[in-house]
Length: 204
Image (tube, rainbow, N blue to C red; front, side, top):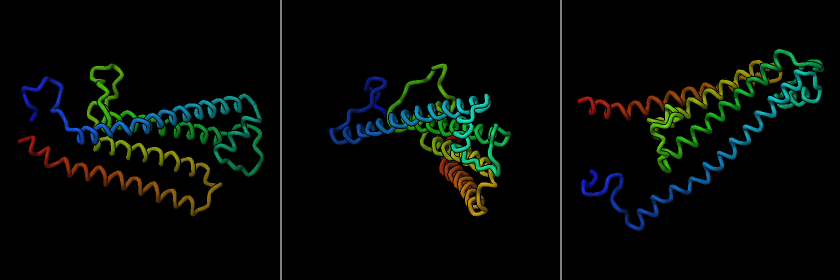
């Protein structure tokens, strides 16, 4: 329990060694700043892909070939204009970037809040709903769910462009996706088992 004689909002003073160990959490700050830079790279990549899509729709052959290369589309005949399959693959690629960006935000904001320092966002109109009750367990489950979403998009892209992949690749990606699903279920069940007894105690 916190000493009632201590000032509100302040904990007991730490010794030199515990203070050093506790302050070491700030070593994670460059990692989160690096992820912010990676987020910026994804934004640039998204805008470039979107611009190429708009240019290709307007009839640019150069942009069309860039899209064909970036999405790994290998048609049976030479492509002279956008088709439905290409548009779908490009849009899925853009959605994939957005979902990875969401994953980065969860890691940056949730990880900083959980492992480094409080951001004091309580009452802020733009505070993410999930951040109000975030902890290591919640963050772990949300990250697993986000990874499943990203894997689903990759699997859908592969199935749409299945003619360009071998059966071995299709089976391997399906197995990997199922493994992600089972891992997420195992994480959720484990957290529920660990939190369950504490929740029952609190009810009584």
